[in-house]
Image (cartoon, rainbow, N blue to C red; front, side, top):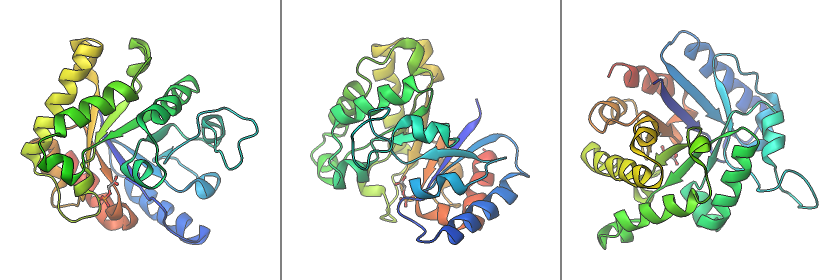
Amino acid sequence: MKLLIVANWKCHPVTEKEAKNLFNLTQQEIKKIKGAEVVICPPFVYLSQMKPSSLVLGAQDCFWEKKGAYTSGISPLMIKNLGCQYVILGHSERRKYFKDSNRIINKKLRVALKEKLKPILCVGETKDQKDKGKTQKVIRDQIERGLKKVSKNQIKNVAIGYEPRWAIGSGEPCSPEEVRVVDLLIRKIISKLYNRNISNKLRILYGGSVNSQSAQTYIQEAKVQGLLVGSASLKPKEFVKIVKESLKS
Ligand code: PGA
């Protein structure tokens, strides 16, 4: 299974020129690397300007309807038509600032799957939940509710990103041992919801303050099949190094 490395640019950069530059610089370097599927998720407004060849295009979110009277909604069909293959759903910043609930995330995920997009469902606990020993319950809840009514056939196109909220953008990454525990927990949940075979094939990614020094340990020790990279993906050299380091595992 190819490693899946996802760059989430979040709400950066602020000009189209910078976005094109960032994309092209990253693409030039990624072209020389084999063995990983590298997805770039820019803000919606830049999607039509990106010309992916060695990189794959993804979106950071989508709405749950295909079209209609939904002011400001960006539909899965629109992003699909702009060349996106992937869509990040349930990112913790969406949950926190835009109040995306598990029910809303599930609606988005099912429509995205219908439109043949590959959702990356993000799950993760807050610091407070972790301190109270609630990590397992939170993850189970987010997965069971996020994947409600998703069939055995559809789940094959879903990847799950474990992103502990306290590790995102904090410079306080989760240890590979802790990620390993959650990786196994996610597989157990998926086994129960679907079956062991599906669970074994599921791609689980880690995200939260990943850099070129830590990338390899997550793949090697936590045994995840990919990474979600936020701030480091805005620095092409560092991001390319993350991809290269991941492949050394
Ligand atoms: P970070 O973000 O790498 O800046 O911590 C990760 C993410 O939010 O996916």
